[in-house]
Length: 254
Image 1 (spheres, one colour):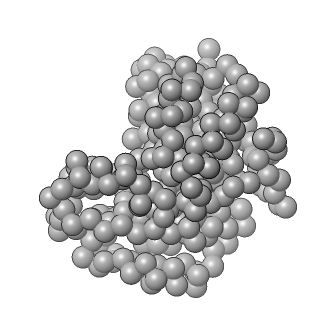
Image 2 (tube, helix red, strand yellow):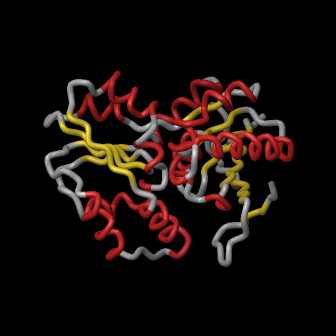
């Protein structure tokens, strides 16, 4: 029987993780929930996020259960609420964390960067990752909510304001000596190609999508990959209606 995996994010960014999971476990039953009513999460307080996410997911799970595994495909939500959520639910929960450890292992210049939301770059968990895995490196942190909005724009409208992107990246002033730039927000792989055009071309962009998919497999068991390879349709849910959408989305209220 196909496993039911729920992928959650504030917006459409978690589809970058969803894609990796679907490619590795195509037969899985996948539900994708976005809390677009409060997008972007990177500007919200810890107290509000904790209450909001716990309440929303508790409500949502009752609508679609049984659930075998939950992926919090949002770096902001993962770094701030993952421990609380694991105490609240009785199934495995996989979080997304910035790929600081692999960046520190790959860097030759000993200069790495983390591009994420303001909440993620300011979070104590991010600081602990830097301390534990990148102590020998110079680590620059860059916080942006505008890039989240630009990624949403590209996904929904198949269009991206390159001038706004360039202005935002110029404002962030990403160090040209960085050779590993961690995309610490799941929205950012959606615009990775565009980001690459405006930074040092020798800089490698890293995200956690494949690592998260592998973690899902390890928790569900290797036999989860033994079934057929026919991709199943994804069920999409949102907390606010879209004026226009290219996906069949069910709006839930909470």
